[in-house]
Image (cartoon, rainbow, N blue to C red; front, top):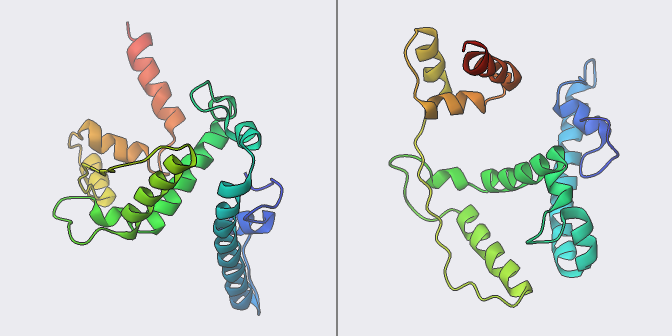
Length: 191
């Protein structure tokens, strides 16, 4: 993951963000500050580049990256790491612009910028192919499930709902391969 060519993040950025590299010593504080600033600048400039890519990257070049819309999209279908990157790029942008402010019980108020950005992006994408998007509705059913209380319930032997288990499975603390193996044994080997 950290050894790819430089892109929005350099190899050193990836190593530092994932904890493989640490800054220590007399200048560590300044080095961390500089690394964070450089990352912010490259992310900002990369996001600005998407306006150029959206307008000017030729259709056949986009299809080489993402496949042909409506057909089997081989680069995405055959490359789980690429598919995860697309998913996480969308999640990063939506999360960073406040999408969670409209999620969960009792959360309401003015529409967050993320809702506006998502709506505008859909309008813009539609216009590219001559489609007028008349209305976009974002309907999110969500509940807050604090991970700490779920872990306490699990440790206490309390039964968790499938929804609560899913939240734990999606955390980085769970090795899903072990869970899959346990389910496989339970379903197929206990017969």
